[in-house]
Amino acid sequence: MQKKVHIKKGDMVTVIAGNAKGLKGRVLEVDRDKDRALVEGVNMVSKHTKPNAKAPQGGIIKREAPLHISNLMVVDPASGKPTRVGRRLNEKNKLVRYSKKSGEEIK
Image 1 (tube, rainbow, N blue to C red):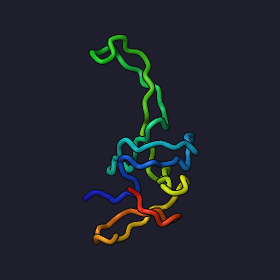
Image 2 (cartoon, one colour):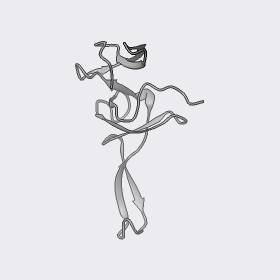
Image 3 (cartoon, rainbow, N blue to C red):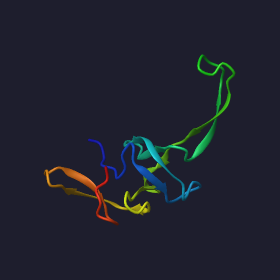
């Protein structure tokens, strides 16, 4: 059984700890087994690649490295500030995530 995490692919998040503290970005991928997430434009690392069909020259490319999800917080859709996430039933009896700061539903 997979763990429940407070972030999903496509969420806007902010980094609350580490070298990338304060940066915001969209979640590209979530690895529930390792509790890590890939955030667009955050935690960039240099990767050395050999020449291949995709990169005939090879060389050094910059790419995102995964961050631990404990270092990420979802951005409140109303205020744009970091918020905790809760779960509740909406009018249609469907479980939805909502912002603890503003009470607004997170899409």
